[in-house]
Length: 96
Image (cartoon, rainbow, N blue to C red):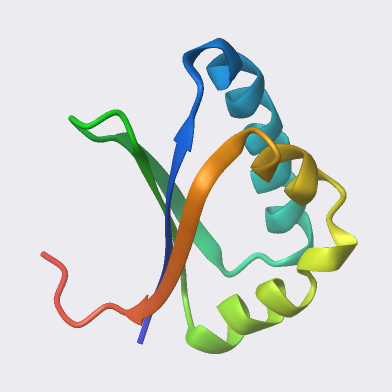
């Protein structure tokens, strides 16, 4: 069963371009070492916050990537541009 890690956070408008560049680099680095990452979706919500969903083939692959997170130098650089962040893990129950 596929797994998803969803983040919710804010990014200052002045930081958005740099955030997107850092996020792109982070995604590439994660994919290089963890090919189970199938896709990543960033959505700007009407209240100005963002949801960032990272989709994995399996929960085990997601767990391995999360365990390796401290080895990705892009992660703290990217998340430094966010505030009020939360994260939740889940499993896909139905996808059409």
